[in-house]
Amino acid sequence: MHIRKLAPPDREPVLAVLRSDGTFQIDEVDVAMELVDDVIARPDVDYSALVCEDAAAGRVLGYVCYGFTPMTTGTYDLYWIATHREARGRGVATRLVQAMEQKLGAAGARIVRIETSQSEAYGAARSFYARLGYAEVGRIRDFYKPGDDLITFAKSLDERAGKLRPVSVPDPSAPGAPRLRTPTATTS
Ligand SMILES: CC(C)(COP(=O)(O)OP(=O)(O)OC[C@H]1O[C@@H](n2cnc3c(N)ncnc32)[C@H](O)[C@@H]1OP(=O)(O)O)[C@@H](O)C(=O)NCCC(=O)NCCS
Image 1 (cartoon, protein in one colour):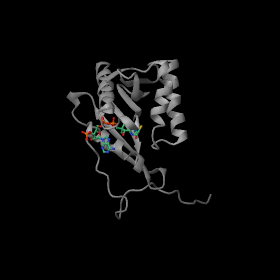
Image 2 (spheres, rainbow, N blue to C red):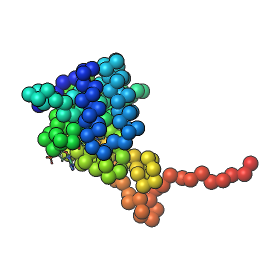
Image 3 (spheres, rainbow, N blue to C red):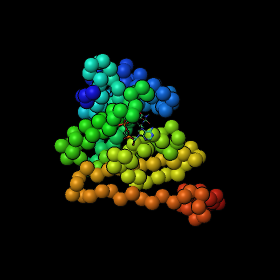
Image 4 (spheres, rainbow, N blue to C red):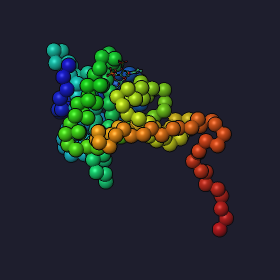
């Protein structure tokens, strides 16, 4: 297995990775591929991507797409990461994230942010992020749809800054748990 930058011939294999199970809906695959196409057209401008390849078989096993977060100093977003269904649990995504962090660290990055969904389909991804030291630092309830929160994970790459503190997230069903305020009708 080795990690390298995504190149134009990787487009179809990456699409196959994204379609290899039911995690991503068709519209999500479309958005992921828009970013892949941007990387191919303008590498390392808005987005960058790495692939993990089984060199012997010449097969793309997974990819990660990330980019600089505009209007920040040294903050980056990890936008998409996926491993082909048949290659999971073998450290492909770990290698991809470690390679990304190495590149970003060398470029002076401070923070990597990941936004993800609370839905069951993303359960593996949430465990994976936690395992790699990403802390849950925020949550917007019912963001994607009722019962499906947006969860923000983040990790500090700046060792001097120390670890990002995870927020404690109250049980949404608990009395007094914070909720978005519903606008009240006003008369003018
Ligand atoms: C999340 C994902 C990228 C992990 O890829 P992977 O190559 O299988 O991950 P790794 O083999 O590097 O796993 C590293 C660790 O992550 C955690 N992990 C990975 N898959 C997991 C799962 N299904 N359930 C629980 N933990 C999991 C484990 O702690 C694992 O360590 P271990 O093997 O020592 O137990 C993969 O499951 C995937 O492609 N999912 C669908 C796409 C997705 O949800 N992407 C994220 C949103 S963009």
